[in-house]
Length: 221
Ligand SMILES: [Ca+2]
Image (cartoon, rainbow, N blue to C red; front, side, top):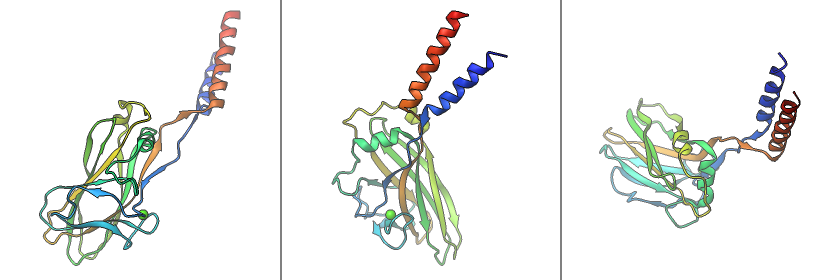
């Protein structure tokens, strides 16, 4: 019975020894996004910043499709860095979380249409892509929809190198529809969520103190 108390104490101290990183906004398209990858070619009729809808701030990334059904990739980067990748701090933010989320809004049309959306990341963790984040989801005529897309990349993260200070990070979004006439989609509030717990200084001190106390106790007994 007496052995349960130290174990419980260890568990409580371990719980106190971690804190969570807050959610991090990757991009919200509030300034004109850097986009590369021939975005004006089919199946995207046009890609760009729009104030027609937003889930964070006042603007979003607007995509107008035709129905050719082929993938098209959009490389999205920071608002002002002039490159098609994000800086080292973004890789660190990615590493400190386990999920990528963004919101996709599809306004109502006078016909139904389908949509597939995926995302890809690149950087020190290597190239990884995830199709089907929205998986050929049909939207009926007259309906609109708001979908929060979540990509759990924790398995990729767990084998990725720790941030090294000169890193970079790249995000590609890709989507397609097979519906003649296509449709409009808006993407906004790309963010990292579900933080990896990090030790806190006080928690580590408590753990060290606990370990020392247990060590003395074992030597005495
Ligand atoms: Ca926005």
